[in-house]
Image (cartoon, rainbow, N blue to C red):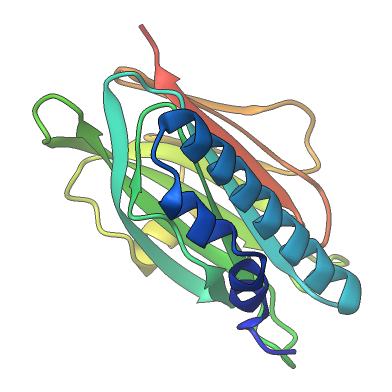
Length: 213
């Protein structure tokens, strides 16, 4: 199965093209919602066609009033990205990224992604939000794990960050297994992150970040 399938499907629907042609905010928001739906539908089609497929959808809502998400980075321990992070996630908008296992391998979809937290007024980054995900190939041995946190703006998105969030002692982040009940909540500085992850072979992480006060 070609990894370009998702992009081809989105382009064939014309969702992205129509979104760029809208001149008012209401139409743009509606187009963005349609695009998000198309991404989810495409990823579900891949999962249905390949029962051993491993995939992780990361859906992010930026509910911050004074901060935007920018300068996205990713480090993949296993697998690859088929729908990348948006370069900029404004206040009150959402983003989605899709990560899948490498075809014909007994490996899962595992990695970490980051965004800089940029002040809308000063245009300066004050920190870095990180999201770690681990969707294993063998559920008899491992389970879905995820973590979220806020780090110093100089923190690199690399294997060291993945190792820290996967195996380290939580300090500037929170971690849990998807099968554990309840939401994952992290509070750091002026921010609160709330997230959930489904306990499935093709899980979805839903994350919301907002100012604590």
